[in-house]
Image (cartoon, rainbow, N blue to C red; front, side, top):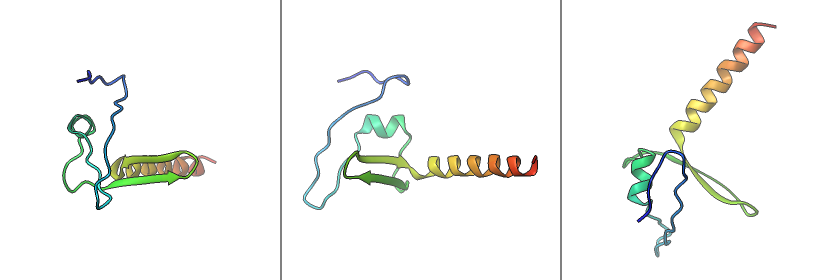
Length: 76
């Protein structure tokens, strides 16, 4: 077993099942507060591989970016 800390990333392996499904390890789900029904965003390209992100975090980031753009344009 490995120690979970906020500063250290978690790396684990998962197996792809017959139907193409993977199971996110419990420690990872707990750390990132991933619950049944949550939406995850998959980013991928052949060169770099696959990244899985919580969709709500991307939505929050997009809102912050749009807010800053709006503030910037209003201050011009």
